[in-house]
Every structure is written in C-alpha cells, then in structure tokens.
Length: 433
Image 1 (tube, rainbow, N blue to C red):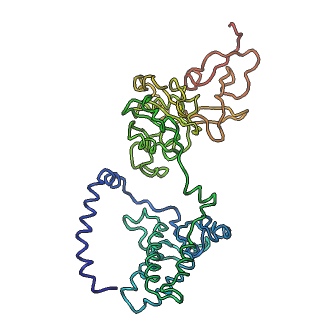
Image 2 (spheres, rainbow, N blue to C red):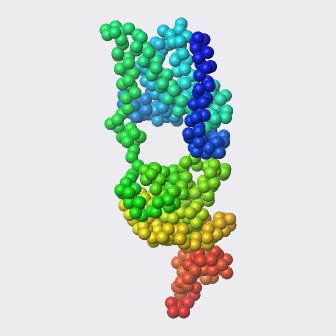
Image 3 (cartoon, rainbow, N blue to C red):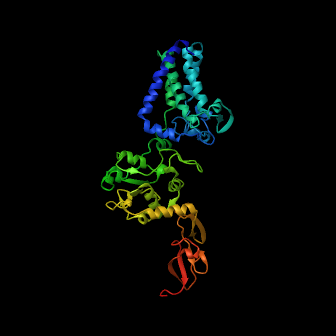
C-alpha cells in the first residue's frame, strides 16, 4: 500500500526477530512447556467467530441499549466485536475520504482484515450460520489451530480507534475547529453498564481470601517447601493465586497450568494423566484411602479444603488424618501434626493401582436402589449420600434390611466373592453368638 516504506519494513524484520529471540530466552521456562505440549487443538467444536450483528449491536454489559436487546444479543455465540454505530459511521466517512491516499487507506485495510478474521470460519448473523469465510483456509495451519477468532476483535477495536482519532484530528467542524458530536457519541456507545449486575459479575469478581492465607496463618501450619493439595481442585479453585500470594511458601500438587486433556486422549503433562487427577477434574470424589495413595504418589504432606469446597468435607479428611479448621480452611493432617509423608503410604499406592487396573466397582444403596461406583471413589452427583451395600449370608449383596435374626459380623471376605474388607457382613445368629 505504501511503496516508500517497504525498505524500512524489510529492515525492521531483523530487530523484530532478535526481539522475539530475547523474549523467548527470558521466558524460557514457559516457552519450553508450550513447545513440549504443542499439538493441534482447535478453538472449540464449532470454531465460531464474532456474530456480525455484534459489531453493531451491544450486549448486556454495554450501558446504552445493551439491556434492551438481550433477546437478540443472547443469540450471539461469541461476543467482543461491538464498536457501535457512531464509530462505524466515522470509519465509513474516513474510508470515503481516504480512497485516494495509500497512506490513509492503510488503517482502513487493516480494519477490514481484522473484521474478516474475527468473524471466524463461517459468517454468523443473529446466531444463524451463513456462508464460509476466508479464515477457513487458514484455521488449520500450524500455530493457528489453537486460535480463537473472536479474540482478534481487539485488533478491530485498535484499528477503529486509530481511524476515529485521525478523523477527529483532521476533519474541520461546523461549530468548533474539530467535530465533537460523533466522537462523543462513539465513546458513549461503548461505556459499560457499571451499574448492572452483569457487569459487576464480570469486572468486580474477587476470589475469596481465607484468613489462613490472607493473615499468613499458613506459615505456622505448613513448613516452608512442603507439598500440599488445595480444594477446590485445579480449575475449580484459586489455589494458584494462593500459592503466588504466599510467595511460593509451599509447593503444590495441582494442575491448570495447561488445558485439561481431551477425554480419551493423553494429557500434555504426566500429572494431568494421573487417574485421581482425571477423576477430580470430572467431579469424582476419591475415598480417603485414594487420597492417601495420591499423597504417596506425589509427595503430598497435607490436604487443605476451603469452606466453600463441597469436597472433601470433614468426614473425608478425617479419614485421611486428624483434621482441624484453621482460618477458614480445613487442614489434614492438622497444624502441628506430622505430614503424610511420615507415614508408610506404599500399601495405599499399591491398592489403588490394583483397583484401577481391575476396574472393579463397589455397590452402594440409595434408598432401595442399588448403584455401583468405581472402587477408589465415593458416591457423588445423583448418588451422593448413598451408603455401602450389605452382604447378607445366603442372599449376597443387597440394599434390603437384614432379616430378623441376622447380626453384624465385621466385613465380608474375599471367600464370599466380594472385595475383602468392603461390605458389612450379616449372618444368622444372636448378639452374643
């Protein structure tokens, strides 16, 4: 577009490349993990872009008009492209005036390119797919398969802002030296609805800071450098924030530095491939014995469960070790108690390996309904609150109450065809028999 600048553009390639090399060197630990885990991914099953109407119509977090057209904006599969009619009018006026100047034409061309890219592979209008777009030809190229097209809206906004600034600075006004009505309207059109709950939920969300972390109580409870696991786990909690704000006082066995593995595919990191990690990310609830095995595998000294975490509760953590609530966090083993690594956890690790390999389930009773749960897990979801089934002599596993004359005799053994030490055993007899 601007032939006179081509030599300068070519000369800039070398320092730009050197700048990237220097940045990669400074960020080497992160770059290494990106390269190690790099694989074709894609930006969602539909690879959607910004809805074309969203460029003109606001969403609920926009102050002017946003709340009045939610019936339309709720159909937008992806948002972020809103510019407003005043800005678009200025862009159109500038484009008409710049049609004879290659230099002035540059921001218009960049604006159009950014719009085309942010729309994604297929044109979507009011939630309805239309025809393919040029991005379809590029979406599967290396490094672009993991790109969300709607995030290119930031470049559209940048080009539009430059055009609005140039037009305002170079256009004579009718009353004042420069126009002010359209620029003011352009700014007003994108003012967010700071008074709405929708905006506050997005902009003013503050992760909870329990006193255990906020008041530095962790320093008297967790020895420096000890490995912990914090619940809610991984993506469902704020454990990375607590670790960072504690200046990495403790190590952490957790995930979420990388995207979760695709179901049925190998994870990017070996930790994410751990059977227990997969269950925690899938809302599974490991038994206390499974948590002890997990601690043995990853060198975990203590488990921390925030008050808002539904799992693990006090009952589960007391099955791991003595637990105590400190500053809004349930700690197991309790502060001052020896870490789990002081115990011999090898039997739990071996038992977990056998259970996972066997694929065995444990029977539970939810009322009169019999449900099966993988052996290393507790009932959760619709089965939450279920109790262990009984083994009644002569009847086998059942959810029915033991017949009259039957009494509890410990746990059923493997000689009865069930996992040893799993089900309460009821036999015919008397309390003193």
